[in-house]
Length: 613
Image (cartoon, rainbow, N blue to C red; front, side):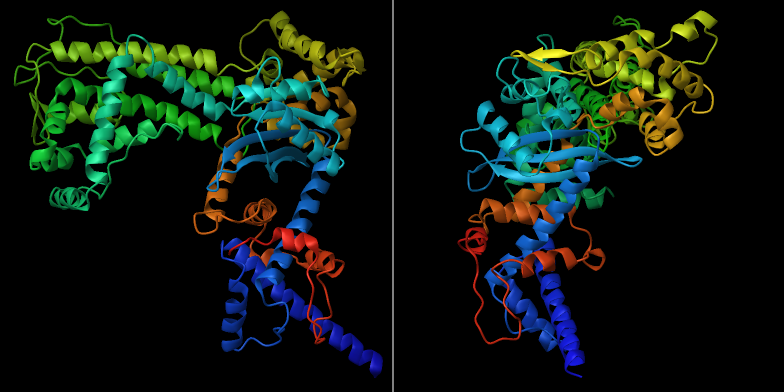
């Protein structure tokens, strides 16, 4: 009977503890202050929830629960990471609301047939130098017993401190693992393509003037609720969707597209509103110019291509073998939509019924240039009277800008979106990149051998760094026989399958793992490459929501724990708290929940709790 009562009491204690942990988890997920735990528990009691302890109800108890939930999640992530044959590390740095420089780290690793991306941690760095960042990374790897020689990919935003040839973080890490490859985030590079194209000497001044005009319009409305209200009323009157004018933000990827697109979308109500406002007359005159309107509509179309490409590169997983192909698709679209017509002279345009030149069919179907071409009647665009040259001189100048900008953009794409030769060679391990058309027997036999040689010369030879020898990762002698087997399968049964699909399958198939062991090593290295660091950017967005102006004194380890729960933690009803509770029981913070003894908090909790929350 006594033993039965003991077990019954223990079960009730376990249930009570789990309820506290669930409340703390809810607080972490919803970005609430730790001190809200007491109010939340009071509300639950008022709603009739039974078995809620009267102890462990304060902000320090909440901090303790959150800390141990984070620890359990962290241990699980690193355990999964250690099981992966290779892993990649993506790193980014930023300054938070309290002007603290932080380093955020994510890892990519293989788990069965899938590639996972997980948050590793938030590190506070003092000076942001490459040496400090490298030492911080190595310390983290050592803490969790991760072998730096398994870190085969490194991704960053391309800052000199990260990728500097002499002393960058990537260069320093390669001294510990010379087989590691470093990538500049392809989403960052896409944004840089547009920035560099707009700085081309032949279009620089025009782009600068157009950007300034868009920002003037945005500033005009953002500074006055009255002006914005008038625009909204005009949108209602003309049956337009309510849209706010956006400004161009240099730190946001391709914000130029969104801002210019918005001006084009609401051009008619925007112009009628500006016309009625005496303090906006100069802006109104600028936007009434046909050449300006054409160039804005062109930019909306061409930047749509780049924005779509950027969104592809911001997905959770970006296939390293597809980057070049996606870039070439974008180049093809730009050439087809904006460079396919021969430049015309003033006498070469067809005339409309109003004797104005007809705009050539540039741009995508149902794009902004298409809208402009269909809606313009002489010098009237919708209901707006435009300043337009009847001889077409302004149209010629606008098309010249279109041609120059398109060519400059194509050149920057070719320059920026080319990966290292070693990683480019990985495309021949993807069946969808293999040709099976009317090539000769000899061509099919030699297909991919140059790329295979490149891979073998990088991963299959001994490397020396500062007198230290690093053994080859693969056996070059077996590579070519394995590739012959793979190529037969890739051009028949596996034809059309992508890189992740086919090698994820091979990684989970014992028969194929035994037949293609050396190729599998290379393929798994390719799978964990950090092609995009968009995950880091999303992490910093979460950081800014957690550590905001109201919680600016949150300490680093508290922010790290909250970030981990926010990013990696499942939904409340799906989370298993057993590991977290076990860790908590083993800590100094635990005291018997039904004793009258006031609980103590260890030094770790004292360091974890924020100064004011």
